[in-house]
Length: 148
Length: 487
Image (cartoon, rainbow over all chains, first blue to last red; front, side, top):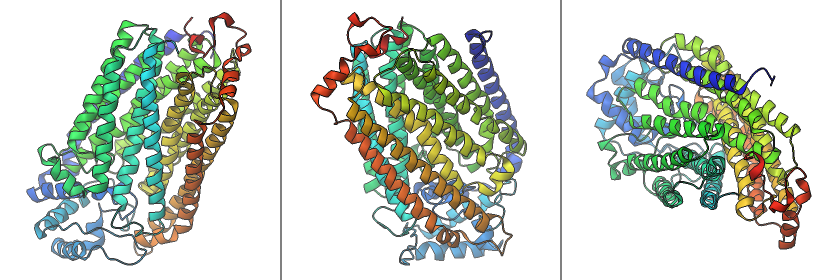
């Protein structure tokens, strides 16, 4: 680098630039926290949704599936599984979920298998409520289509 | 090597490499599970293999960073490590916690593990990369605090070089941002928002400071270039890393709930994220071109250059490929993400650990001018094997990702193929990935073997090749480059 560009100038860019950018990040975070309640509809987080998130976490669902595109890419996206499988009908979706979870593993030879998690009926309802709530978060219209 | 206490780094490097081997073994298992879906089911379900794969990566890179710090900080500070005993103790604590956690993943169903470790008291489990039981996370905090304290005290007592200051800033950041892993609100959007404060602010933030300082240290040692020049470059590189990377976090906020302005900010700033990596390439090649001496450890120089190039390709080019919001809308969470993740992590972080290992391990084994030529030759084959293997994995996954987008994401509802059907169509690409994975594993095996290659007389000859150091005082004895920047 050119001689007139000294080490102390480089140092100032690092400390000044790094610090300023971090402050900007804090500001944007603060603004996002004010905006989020309208986008995540937290008023709809019921006890069942809370319990559903626990079921989701305690069984490491993210180890195969993605949720809003994050997680593993071995099994289908689930943030929109309510739209894909539920046809906008909560009761119908819960019925589907009970049957689907009970049927695992499908044991089709060579197919990717989902383990049997031995969830109670109640837990499947919780999990469904969590996925229904997730499907209604304003995520800038992602994914592009129902297939996720 | 200038100080006896630098030797505490040795077990850290060795254990890091052992965990690396485990990571690759589970990578191969998953590579096959992508093709034969029920391979090893129900004994090792995919999610378990993936947890083991990613958590081993995380832990071995941390072991590598710790080894690197314990090796380089005393030399930079020009003083013995504050407490070698604490460093040795923490090695065993971290190793035991890591091994116990991995065994837990493998032998206890995850829900059972959550119950056994009382996850309900402070629920932190079940989130990607942060699957560790809460008790393990607390252990990581203890180990990190002891580590940062030990390194910090050494720097406080000794010389505060730029490399040391950048490194300790990175380490403090690493420890502080990890604390966000204990924040797990029941609101998934908030959970995800701050999850990235661990994951993104680590790998695209403070870890880059650690990477930069280890690279700068190695380059000073193997090239003998004036530290003033190297430090100036280091400052500019990490300045660009922070300026682009902090707001660049916005590229993770596109589709998980936060507002629309992140689409612009995330695209704009993360488009700048390749800049520091590109500068790292310029920097590394310029320093090697302008070197003042020819260090006998040639393979360490190759690793350093390789880190810069592969880091730029993985983090820079493959990151940019899908970081703009209009592109990411279609590619988010496809095999393209996996392609980028593999090359970036290998190029930037796995390779920097192998760089410092290749530089420091021979010195700690009494070979200041590097391993004997035969060992270096094998190691350079291993280097190319691993690089080609990882590039092949990346290209295969990139094609798979593009194909996945074309079949599953771009078509309208009704026309788009479902996830499972699409995966069937990608199997040829998954075979290609697996083949390159085997090539990578072969390279890793060669790398391990290279540690045991070379006869005693060959090592003797290498050690006595003082003519490589015309600029230095030959009476000082066999040179390892330690004095390169210390004068």
